[in-house]
Length: 337
Image (cartoon, rainbow, N blue to C red):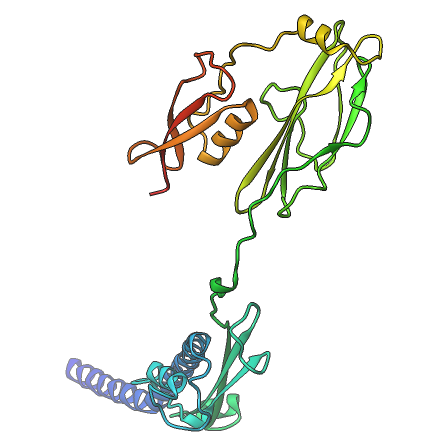
């Protein structure tokens, strides 16, 4: 009895193992087919990325050399560099691009080297599937892929065409009376200045501070109890240089509204024998010279190679010394190199 049972067990075990092999043999082709389809789908994805990169590389090259494109002609580094760069990107890939598959257009159509001009490279490629299962998804075994990329045409402005304007010349007048009561206002006009200045700096009371940056300002003078004369200074600036016009004692403020006797004005307000020059250390050379000119000083420049670039390193005499107007101030200056 025990021998019969053992035999039946061996019979059923053998039958089950053989059945498993048969089932595996039936499933294996289906599994391999789906595996191949998955790999094929990956190949399509990779081919599409390759085509995108090829179009982008072609646009980069066309942005530099839009003239080196000959449609439908093979790669030539001397005459058809755009085609060369597109095809080089696909070397060793799953998709081949022929010269006829590459197009280039510009906007504007003449491909000018100018601001806003763009170039577009379009690339086509043919890809063939290995497995037929994906043909139901893509509509056939052969896929027509395409990609496009746009880049701005590179250009540099022609600096030889840029001519700096001449340096400006400061000129101004008062368009209202310059003899006024305390608290009165005077209007000024700088339209006579030459050289198309773009910047204006006014000092209405001789304190070496900028009171206005308008081209044609109006300034209100303080309430004074004695006759006072004010020096007016205009500094005009353009991209080339700057210039200063100083009118000493140009505006007179009198408590009673009448023009003072010059002798009385001089006795009441004697001109100073010396003036402290402004502190220009740390300023650019242009600003330092303008401030010194406004204050009534001359200047010379000594070039040094140490210290902050494009800054005045020192001055002699400095702001602590009282000097007569017209004194020459030595500026120690380091340039931009």
